[in-house]
Image (cartoon, rainbow, N blue to C red; front, side, top):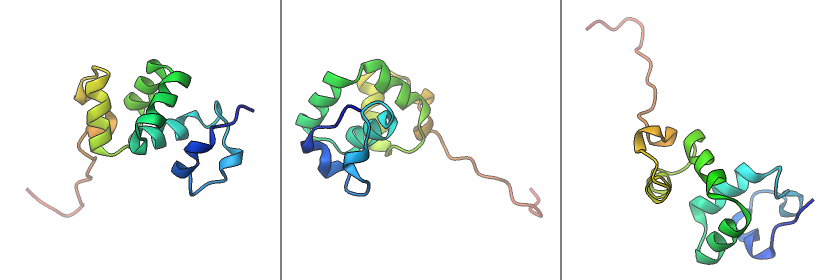
Length: 99
């Protein structure tokens, strides 16, 4: 199991940091670092994960902040209409309402 560097621990306050696995926890790690990371953390991220890993995450997740999603979509040249967390949320039409 490849361990994460200690300087990342501050981003994972709510889980057992020592149990995070570099590969098995990739999605969780990417989300946290992309959403909250500083320059040092992002530098580490790009040294250890590929732009394709990041792009795949941006194109599949719904739980990044809009600010984060906008930034990374622009940085990776992804059309905003392809980013799930930037799409208008689904809203059901309530029964009994007439138009």
